[in-house]
Length: 197
Image (cartoon, rainbow, N blue to C red; front, side, top):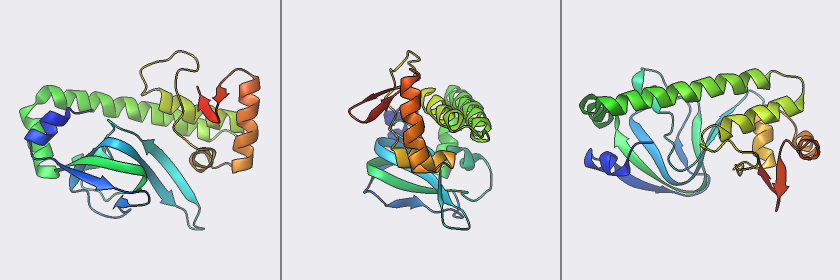
């Protein structure tokens, strides 16, 4: 999203994390801008019965809950490392200074946030469906929307069946069965156990 050189010029530092490391906890105060250089991070929440709900899976180039740097609210989610990860971490004050001194970057971030929110609304709308296929296709559409390539089967879905279940509120067995049906309907392809959408 933001050029690494620009982040480094404003004082960003690289941080390295391992699977299951927590970058920040739900309820903590946002103090840094984080951008993923390599690896994968999930944003999750646990409901009152302890069931995990995954709100997003973030991959290289994505920022992590940057929208909370613009308001005085606590994190509503946890950021947990899925695959060994490196982030660039920039203190909030330096992030704000960078935006003040680079108005075009500020506009780009506004556009990016707007696109993410738009697609998130669509995904949430699909998640209210009683049909498992609508829920799953909503999540796949959301993630593919950031790939830049809209051609059929061009996007390798970076989600496991369990993660899809946690994002849609479905059981893993339902996700597996529905994915097989979606493949028969030519909505997606499965190659070497990976989903292509």
